[in-house]
Length: 178
Image (cartoon, rainbow, N blue to C red; front, side, top):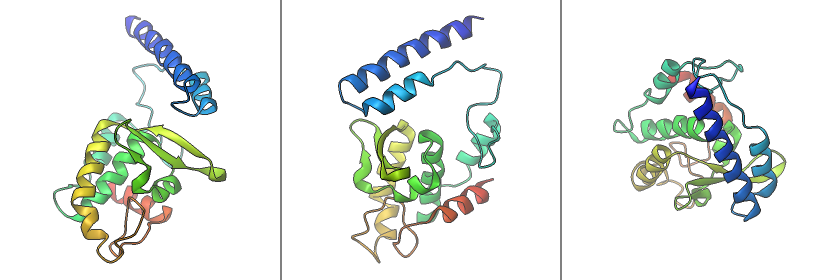
């Protein structure tokens, strides 16, 4: 019972923070209000709130397996694939949003991504510190190699030939990780 009370208190604090950030125009006011309205307490005993492409909740073990599937020290592609999985997990991006993400969309100072989604609407999405650490490492190493054939490519995640990835490629990486 204590954990539910703690979660409800945390929910109230997060709700207030989202409303305040929207009111101060730090994040989109409508988006923060929508997020604040849709907060709810989950039971701790249930699987963590990650859903696969079929709409099924993943267990903590399955999430750990996905996050550990690629070794960023192995190769540039392994690092890129690890970053893809980390970004999908930590930010909840759609595959199409992930592939459209540009280097300039990564706001390291505020820990957010500027994402262009459905209807060409831009939203600000918080992203975890591990993901931002990996983005920084990827930009300093693997992406430099992947961008050799297309050094002006604006996209964060690149193919071997320096091109933009498509959402089918993202899902093939997720399936490989499973």
